[in-house]
Image (cartoon, rainbow, N blue to C red):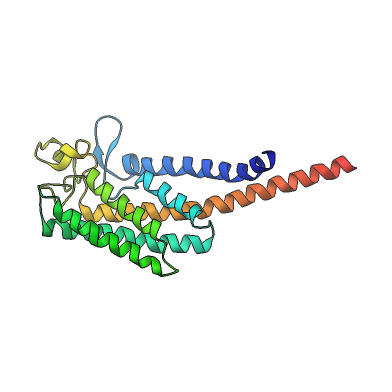
Length: 228
């Protein structure tokens, strides 16, 4: 138990430090540093480009699941781009197939794209779990931000404060319009955040290695002093 704890501590510390930094940076980016005006409560209206804070944790976890090395980072990154782009295809194609209020157009394209995401697993360079969760993250953020393209007036009202006062805007279903976002920016924002999760995974292993090496060095020095 003690040995397992010693092995886990460096990675736990690295993860905790980087998780704190990511949340602090991503939320300040969206609500303070890169916004479209004051909401009147101390927060800014996020611009069309967001840093989607939860998304990075998805690919961060998958990086560890895939092996936590450079090969894992490459596989997860490639599959993430494929999965997120499949989400973009869904957002473009499903409204052209069947618009609001019919869901079958969305369902058809989810089935087609899901088949493609899984069949690609025959290739060694492809990591299907990362593709599926990236697709899920993009589609989920599309739902949260107003389903631009599928729902009338959906998603396209997040570019200014005046839009929040319009009762027919997508803001009704997108946290009062605060997260209402056009679908191309949904894709860009999610993809950027997902790929940053891979970077955070790499950084956490490097930082954990440094902490572990420092701890081992101090332990070795202490043992040497005790022997003297």
